[in-house]
Length: 416
Image (cartoon, rainbow, N blue to C red; front, side):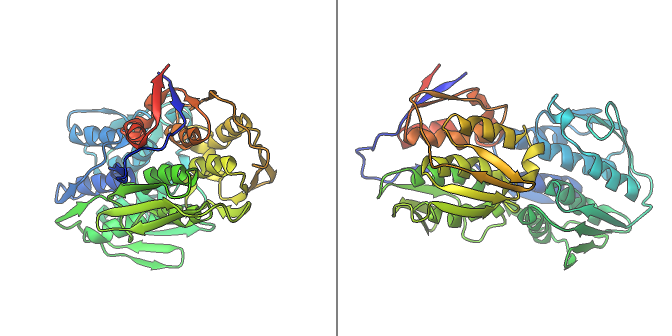
């Protein structure tokens, strides 16, 4: 199903619209794996309703009854369960997913696990799911080296199983290190769950130990908040929204959206139970230099927003977008071109967005490429002109209530 989204009209209500953001699926998915590794000693409050998290809950709940585990399109579940089953499963299992998932590389993680002592083989193409994972017999190495410029989920997966290994694990991360905040999130949640570790530059060491009994509460999702920063950035001066459940001290690297959005005239103020966003100023800079190495998931929010505000961007750190739910760089190039905003890579690893000729005709159709962030990142452009978003169900992957929240704020959504 598609939605035609009419541009926002100012509400007559004097009350600030309050949005109940979804819980962080990044935190939720990590805690679920730690809970399984702890044999249920870790209790979790406020788990995410995102499809990825619900898929992981279902698979772990039915672990004893299944031999084939289908993660669908949940990349986090694929990476985390590959590591989890390699050390925790008492039987041979097959781990698979959608056609797209079977085209997303996992060889680096598999090689690392096999070098430790796991027995993982490929059911089809070398380096890609589906995987056959045999029960762990013995640890043959306690040291591994892994590139830091690939998915941080590989590293997080290894970190979480490290305490369960007979010899523990020392992980050397080869620089440059991308998405470091997600690695820090994993270590922070492990520490709250009783795990001790040492970190010296790019080497992380974890000795054999047990996860401890604890209760962990999941924060609201900063990635989900980014779409509201984009909406307020494209609003009139004085427009506000309140986002529930966000904390000033967060494990989530995507909280950098608050500093980035200051360039777009957005002010943020932390309250007792969340944060208030307000459009305070006009755009101060028409050119920004941004590094997405630590926050690649924000690209699909920031680029469309910058385009609509005629802000040109010079960017680095987008490499990992090629192996996400879709080739996100190609998807952004295709959709931004519909607004006369070319996204180019003049030098390898360096991108430019030219927003100087942004134009938007009523009803431009946005392809979503089976990617939740394409739908949610482009929807705020309806602040300027009505647009059509295709395949609206993709948002269920991370933010199931997204369209209802847009209606609450004042957008008109018409089924097509």
